[in-house]
Image: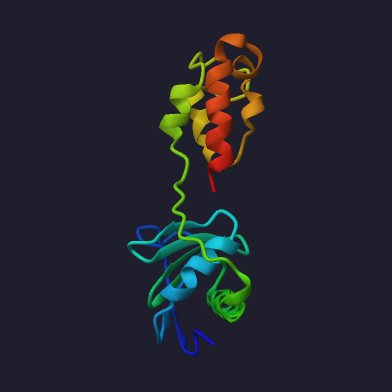
Length: 176
């Protein structure tokens, strides 16, 4: 078992005290960085920074950040939920560690999509055919998964935009 002690600390999100969620920081008794490459390999959409030993992913819909001696979880309803989800996350980490012989670790570093890089490949006509007010809003919504690339009609239908469309498809396929 990798994590034997995990002390929860409930905190309010910084600079947003009117928010109705809490965060929890689990202070871990030992170094959990050896499990990070295994979690990076098994958790969909994980963002890993090997040099800093930081792994980010979503667990049960909550953002998670793992560091060598700390587990941070966000967007929880209250302290009770925070402690419960932290315990389930601790089990996931320990289970992953126990099954590490069956998993090929990954140190691949993935980066989030950049809305500006996406915007530069869009037609930039602000035609609103996608239902959004501008191509920049479309790019932002695409990054967070609120819209599909196919909803940009000029990009998908006009031969002029075939190459940017292919570049965007490659970017989206490689993104976490």
